Length: 67
Image (cartoon, rainbow, N blue to C red; front, side):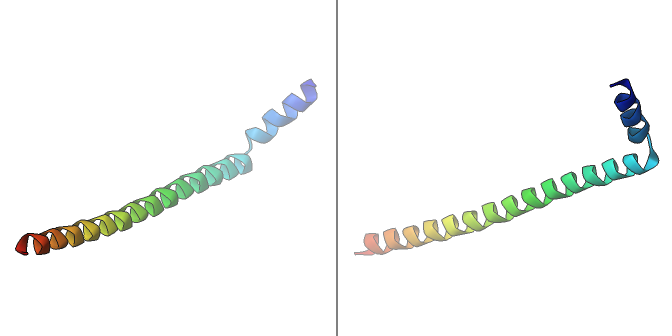
């Protein structure tokens, strides 16, 4: 068991391992940014839909008041 632990410690301190971990971390960060951006765009789309609906309702109410 101690040999396995020593081997892991040796591998985990290598430059290649550090570079791979850095790349994984960057990939997770980039993915999170992409998801947040997509959510922001979807939120903006729905806000536009709701604003259009509100405008439509306001126009209908104005028409009813004219009668």
